[in-house]
Length: 230
Image (cartoon, rainbow, N blue to C red; front, side):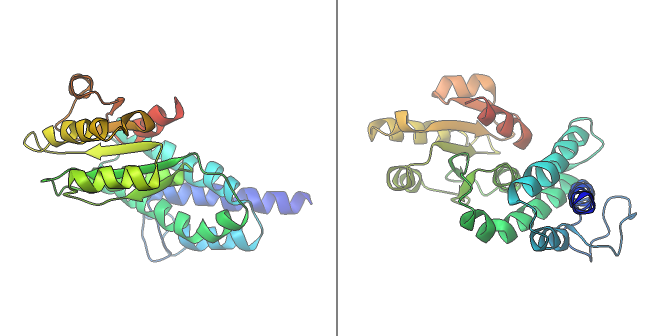
């Protein structure tokens, strides 16, 4: 049995290291090319599932643990957006592979999270990173896309009843749409049913308070921390 535990730990540790390196598949070189030619996050996740390692362990000790390191390196400017995006994409691919296993194991999600870049804004890198990180942290994420009309957001909240709504805007000209969405939720008597988190280069803590959002998130890692507090 000890051998099996050791093998499991080795695979999980290797998944974590490959997330840190931003290696989705065997073809990817990674940050410092030390793992070039070896299995990436996708292959390793398939191996782990084949050895009956719990999806929860893969997520917590492999994927999320790896992204925590990436987050630390990003905050100290050791990593930049392309590095973080590569790691986040590797985690997203692993989560897609594990979806059937998670469903069959009836693993409870931490909640339903809808995310959108507001009307008039087509920037999506930040939004995509948040979506992938939250998926990797155990949330059921619904990405509504970019340039999303307020009516579509309101309709989704009414029909799907997410516990959380993330709104993203990069521009000062589009960030006001976040306030429009919150007002529309209030008018439709839906505001109290959903926590609204906002983020993006244009917005701030002060702006979040001004429009009545529940929280302002500096980046994707901050969004995970904020959610853990609810």
